[in-house]
Length: 225
Ligand SMILES: [Zn+2]
Ligand SMILES: [Zn+2]
Image (cartoon, rainbow, N blue to C red; front, side, top):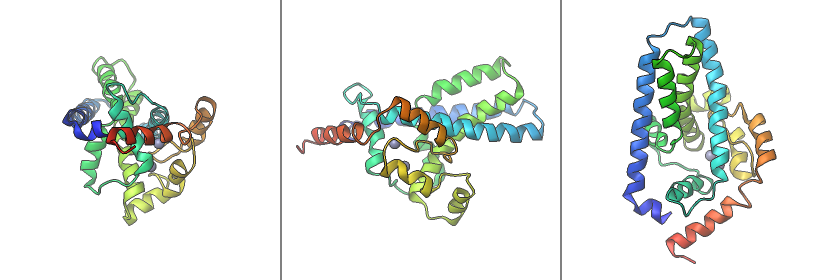
Protein backbone atom coordinates (compact mmCIF):
# COMPACT_ATOMS: atom_id res chain seq x y z
CA UNK A 1 0.00 0.00 0.00
CA UNK A 2 2.87 2.30 0.79
CA UNK A 3 4.08 1.86 -2.75
CA UNK A 4 0.62 2.86 -4.00
CA UNK A 5 0.14 5.84 -1.70
CA UNK A 6 3.65 7.22 -1.93
CA UNK A 7 4.01 6.88 -5.65
CA UNK A 8 2.61 9.73 -7.68
CA UNK A 9 3.19 7.40 -10.63
CA UNK A 10 0.21 5.22 -9.70
CA UNK A 11 -2.04 8.19 -8.94
CA UNK A 12 -1.16 9.71 -12.32
CA UNK A 13 -1.71 6.36 -13.99
CA UNK A 14 -5.26 6.29 -12.59
CA UNK A 15 -5.91 9.81 -13.91
CA UNK A 16 -4.68 8.81 -17.38
CA UNK A 17 -6.93 5.72 -17.42
CA UNK A 18 -9.91 7.80 -16.22
CA UNK A 19 -9.29 10.44 -18.91
CA UNK A 20 -9.00 7.77 -21.60
CA UNK A 21 -12.18 6.01 -20.45
CA UNK A 22 -14.30 9.16 -20.24
CA UNK A 23 -12.96 10.52 -23.57
CA UNK A 24 -13.72 7.19 -25.27
CA UNK A 25 -17.23 7.19 -23.76
CA UNK A 26 -17.88 10.66 -25.21
CA UNK A 27 -16.53 9.58 -28.61
CA UNK A 28 -18.73 6.49 -28.53
CA UNK A 29 -21.81 8.57 -27.67
CA UNK A 30 -21.01 10.91 -30.55
CA UNK A 31 -20.69 7.97 -32.97
CA UNK A 32 -23.91 6.49 -31.62
CA UNK A 33 -25.80 9.72 -32.32
CA UNK A 34 -25.40 8.94 -36.06
CA UNK A 35 -26.94 5.48 -35.74
CA UNK A 36 -30.71 5.20 -36.02
CA UNK A 37 -32.55 2.77 -33.73
CA UNK A 38 -36.29 2.81 -32.94
CA UNK A 39 -37.43 3.72 -29.42
CA UNK A 40 -38.60 0.17 -28.58
CA UNK A 41 -35.21 -1.25 -29.53
CA UNK A 42 -33.45 1.49 -27.58
CA UNK A 43 -35.31 0.39 -24.45
CA UNK A 44 -34.43 -3.24 -25.22
CA UNK A 45 -30.75 -2.26 -25.72
CA UNK A 46 -30.78 -0.44 -22.36
CA UNK A 47 -32.23 -3.42 -20.47
CA UNK A 48 -29.80 -5.88 -22.06
CA UNK A 49 -26.84 -3.52 -21.54
CA UNK A 50 -27.81 -3.15 -17.85
CA UNK A 51 -27.69 -6.91 -17.31
CA UNK A 52 -24.48 -7.36 -19.34
CA UNK A 53 -22.68 -4.46 -17.60
CA UNK A 54 -23.70 -5.83 -14.18
CA UNK A 55 -22.41 -9.29 -15.14
CA UNK A 56 -19.18 -8.15 -16.85
CA UNK A 57 -18.11 -5.85 -14.01
CA UNK A 58 -19.03 -8.50 -11.44
CA UNK A 59 -16.83 -11.04 -13.23
CA UNK A 60 -13.87 -8.61 -13.37
CA UNK A 61 -14.41 -7.90 -9.64
CA UNK A 62 -14.42 -11.66 -8.90
CA UNK A 63 -11.14 -12.17 -10.78
CA UNK A 64 -9.51 -9.13 -9.14
CA UNK A 65 -10.57 -10.23 -5.64
CA UNK A 66 -8.49 -13.39 -6.21
CA UNK A 67 -5.50 -11.76 -7.90
CA UNK A 68 -2.42 -11.92 -5.64
CA UNK A 69 0.31 -10.44 -7.83
CA UNK A 70 1.23 -7.84 -5.20
CA UNK A 71 4.92 -7.90 -6.09
CA UNK A 72 4.46 -7.27 -9.81
CA UNK A 73 4.71 -3.79 -11.31
CA UNK A 74 0.92 -3.48 -11.04
CA UNK A 75 0.99 -4.99 -7.50
CA UNK A 76 0.22 -1.71 -5.76
CA UNK A 77 -2.88 -1.34 -7.96
CA UNK A 78 -4.03 -4.85 -6.96
CA UNK A 79 -3.40 -4.09 -3.28
CA UNK A 80 -5.29 -0.81 -3.56
CA UNK A 81 -8.22 -2.68 -5.09
CA UNK A 82 -8.29 -5.19 -2.21
CA UNK A 83 -8.54 -2.31 0.23
CA UNK A 84 -12.26 -2.13 -0.59
CA UNK A 85 -12.91 -5.12 1.68
CA UNK A 86 -11.25 -3.40 4.64
CA UNK A 87 -12.39 0.19 4.14
CA UNK A 88 -15.52 0.17 2.02
CA UNK A 89 -16.37 3.74 3.05
CA UNK A 90 -15.50 6.23 0.30
CA UNK A 91 -14.55 9.88 0.79
CA UNK A 92 -17.69 11.90 -0.04
CA UNK A 93 -17.34 13.62 -3.39
CA UNK A 94 -19.68 14.96 -6.11
CA UNK A 95 -21.01 12.08 -8.24
CA UNK A 96 -19.30 13.28 -11.42
CA UNK A 97 -15.95 13.29 -9.59
CA UNK A 98 -16.66 9.76 -8.33
CA UNK A 99 -17.57 8.74 -11.89
CA UNK A 100 -14.25 10.10 -13.19
CA UNK A 101 -12.03 8.85 -10.34
CA UNK A 102 -13.45 5.33 -10.27
CA UNK A 103 -13.19 5.06 -14.07
CA UNK A 104 -9.43 5.32 -13.43
CA UNK A 105 -9.40 1.85 -11.87
CA UNK A 106 -11.03 0.27 -14.91
CA UNK A 107 -7.99 -0.55 -17.03
CA UNK A 108 -9.84 -3.27 -18.99
CA UNK A 109 -12.46 -0.74 -20.10
CA UNK A 110 -9.93 1.15 -22.27
CA UNK A 111 -9.20 -1.68 -24.78
CA UNK A 112 -12.88 -2.70 -24.59
CA UNK A 113 -13.96 0.78 -25.69
CA UNK A 114 -11.27 0.99 -28.40
CA UNK A 115 -12.66 -2.22 -29.92
CA UNK A 116 -16.24 -0.88 -29.69
CA UNK A 117 -15.16 2.39 -31.36
CA UNK A 118 -13.51 0.46 -34.21
CA UNK A 119 -16.65 -1.66 -34.64
CA UNK A 120 -18.77 1.50 -34.84
CA UNK A 121 -16.40 3.31 -37.21
CA UNK A 122 -16.31 0.34 -39.58
CA UNK A 123 -20.09 -0.25 -39.22
CA UNK A 124 -19.37 -3.90 -38.42
CA UNK A 125 -22.28 -4.36 -35.98
CA UNK A 126 -26.04 -3.87 -36.16
CA UNK A 127 -27.57 -0.70 -34.63
CA UNK A 128 -28.98 -2.74 -31.71
CA UNK A 129 -25.57 -4.28 -30.90
CA UNK A 130 -23.90 -0.85 -31.29
CA UNK A 131 -26.31 0.62 -28.70
CA UNK A 132 -25.76 -2.29 -26.31
CA UNK A 133 -21.94 -2.05 -26.54
CA UNK A 134 -21.85 1.73 -25.98
CA UNK A 135 -24.30 1.51 -23.08
CA UNK A 136 -22.26 -1.31 -21.49
CA UNK A 137 -19.18 0.97 -21.65
CA UNK A 138 -20.97 3.81 -19.86
CA UNK A 139 -22.89 1.64 -17.38
CA UNK A 140 -19.57 0.08 -16.34
CA UNK A 141 -18.57 3.47 -14.92
CA UNK A 142 -22.09 4.05 -13.57
CA UNK A 143 -21.68 0.76 -11.67
CA UNK A 144 -18.82 2.34 -9.70
CA UNK A 145 -21.08 5.25 -8.77
CA UNK A 146 -23.78 2.76 -7.74
CA UNK A 147 -21.27 1.00 -5.42
CA UNK A 148 -20.20 4.38 -4.03
CA UNK A 149 -23.83 5.35 -3.31
CA UNK A 150 -24.51 1.97 -1.72
CA UNK A 151 -21.66 2.48 0.78
CA UNK A 152 -21.64 6.23 1.26
CA UNK A 153 -24.95 7.91 0.54
CA UNK A 154 -28.05 8.43 2.65
CA UNK A 155 -29.85 10.23 -0.15
CA UNK A 156 -33.50 9.26 -0.40
CA UNK A 157 -33.31 9.27 -4.23
CA UNK A 158 -30.43 6.76 -4.20
CA UNK A 159 -32.28 4.61 -1.65
CA UNK A 160 -35.43 4.72 -3.76
CA UNK A 161 -33.49 3.68 -6.90
CA UNK A 162 -31.83 0.87 -4.95
CA UNK A 163 -35.21 -0.33 -3.63
CA UNK A 164 -36.57 -0.18 -7.20
CA UNK A 165 -33.73 -2.48 -8.27
CA UNK A 166 -31.99 0.05 -10.52
CA UNK A 167 -29.01 0.63 -8.24
CA UNK A 168 -27.15 -1.58 -5.79
CA UNK A 169 -29.01 -1.99 -2.49
CA UNK A 170 -27.20 -2.35 0.84
CA UNK A 171 -29.20 -5.46 1.65
CA UNK A 172 -27.97 -7.14 -1.52
CA UNK A 173 -24.34 -5.94 -1.35
CA UNK A 174 -23.51 -6.30 2.39
CA UNK A 175 -22.95 -10.09 2.11
CA UNK A 176 -20.01 -9.40 -0.25
CA UNK A 177 -18.17 -7.76 2.67
CA UNK A 178 -19.59 -9.86 5.55
CA UNK A 179 -19.49 -13.27 3.92
CA UNK A 180 -17.14 -14.93 1.43
CA UNK A 181 -17.06 -15.48 -2.34
CA UNK A 182 -20.49 -13.94 -2.89
CA UNK A 183 -22.38 -11.05 -4.56
CA UNK A 184 -19.64 -9.54 -6.72
CA UNK A 185 -21.95 -7.57 -9.03
CA UNK A 186 -22.28 -3.88 -8.22
CA UNK A 187 -24.44 -2.09 -10.80
CA UNK A 188 -27.68 -3.48 -9.35
CA UNK A 189 -26.66 -7.08 -8.61
CA UNK A 190 -29.17 -8.68 -10.98
CA UNK A 191 -26.56 -11.09 -12.36
CA UNK A 192 -25.28 -12.30 -8.97
CA UNK A 193 -27.17 -15.64 -9.00
CA UNK A 194 -25.14 -16.56 -12.11
CA UNK A 195 -21.83 -15.03 -10.94
CA UNK A 196 -22.15 -16.77 -7.55
CA UNK A 197 -22.44 -20.13 -9.32
CA UNK A 198 -19.36 -19.36 -11.46
CA UNK A 199 -17.43 -18.20 -8.36
CA UNK A 200 -18.39 -21.38 -6.50
CA UNK A 201 -16.91 -23.52 -9.28
CA UNK A 202 -13.70 -21.57 -9.98
CA UNK A 203 -12.69 -19.76 -6.78
CA UNK A 204 -12.11 -20.60 -3.10
CA UNK A 205 -13.20 -17.15 -1.83
CA UNK A 206 -11.25 -14.13 -0.58
CA UNK A 207 -11.61 -14.39 3.23
CA UNK A 208 -9.09 -17.22 3.63
CA UNK A 209 -6.86 -16.08 0.76
CA UNK A 210 -6.40 -12.52 -0.52
CA UNK A 211 -7.94 -10.80 2.54
CA UNK A 212 -5.37 -12.46 4.83
CA UNK A 213 -2.49 -12.10 2.38
CA UNK A 214 -3.44 -8.49 1.80
CA UNK A 215 -3.29 -7.79 5.57
CA UNK A 216 0.23 -9.29 5.71
CA UNK A 217 1.28 -7.39 2.60
CA UNK A 218 -0.01 -4.09 3.99
CA UNK A 219 1.93 -4.72 7.26
CA UNK A 220 5.20 -5.40 5.42
CA UNK A 221 4.79 -2.37 3.19
CA UNK A 222 4.22 0.00 6.10
CA UNK A 223 6.85 -1.66 8.28
CA UNK A 224 4.52 -2.49 11.21
CA UNK A 225 5.37 -6.12 11.73
ZN1 LIG B 1 -14.59 -7.56 -3.51
ZN1 LIG C 1 -18.67 -2.82 -1.41
